[in-house]
Image 1: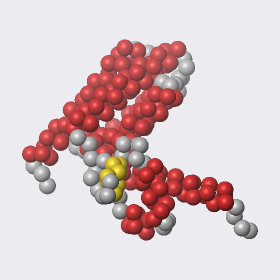
Image 2: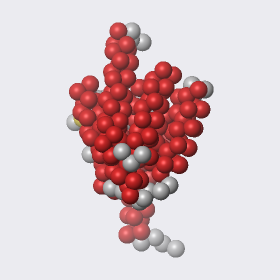
Image 3: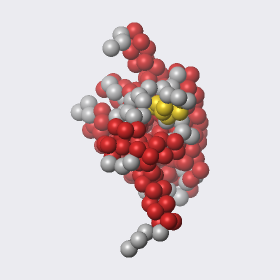
Length: 232
């Protein structure tokens, strides 16, 4: 059966969207590191799609903050300045603190009866990962912990904003949790947030969440400074 024009167009748009999602994943997980050039030919060969589809997907990422389109040079994975990193942490801290405060309020009101057990289960699993110094597992659970609280806040707009922010921040958050002592400190902060949320302590949850993000930035900055002093 001959495929009609609109169907072909729809298929092309869908495929470009799938390629965009995969490129996003590769950037977020560090497979395409900051500063790397987006090689259309290599990417199209690796994904088994046309170079034009890859180009379309790359262009659609231009507004995500993940890549830079440079005239006559091509597309590159965005490499943030320290000022940009700080700004993102500030924004994320404001949204996360609000979400934790809202989660605490909703727990106290009985709107989120399942959240306390989910947070406690996550903490137990996170402790096991930290004990084994399993940074990959800990990082995945760390993302889940934050997602639970954003979902518990019952504010879809806030979660959308938060999710968009953290896409740009994964490489920096992962770096901050790349050593065991930092995992332990992060876990202590998670315990403080959880205690406040389960107890319905709105302002306590807000303060603990804000402190967690501030400490996360400090952990990243310490490691960034060490890399500057001892490159390579």
